[in-house]
Image (tube, rainbow, N blue to C red):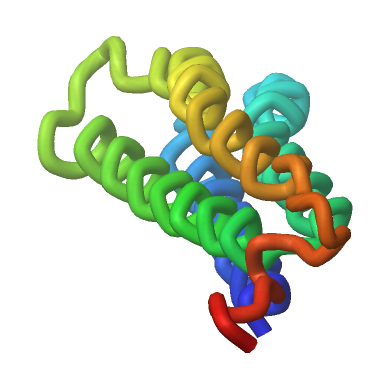
Length: 140
């Protein structure tokens, strides 16, 4: 359930980010800007793809998927907020630079979330071979 919700949030965020990028980044003359935006779209989508890959890979512990869900919500909310802030609230001649900066900010912000999820996914099991999620209460 958490995995599906994470993938849904990632899909929603990627589509919203690409939609904002296509809407706010259109060229006034309707010409040459689309090819440049398509190349930038790969960079904008890469943080979503990284979280989706880790979400599909992690199967053992729900905590790792919850951390990735928090990362997915943060990615989606921050990208929509930063794009709206750059192009609607504080529009200026340098607003287009957000397309270059946003993937870098997202990738840097993902590092702690991915490391925490890796710790949850690959933490050592106790001597009985049962993971922390399935550990028996003491005295049973």
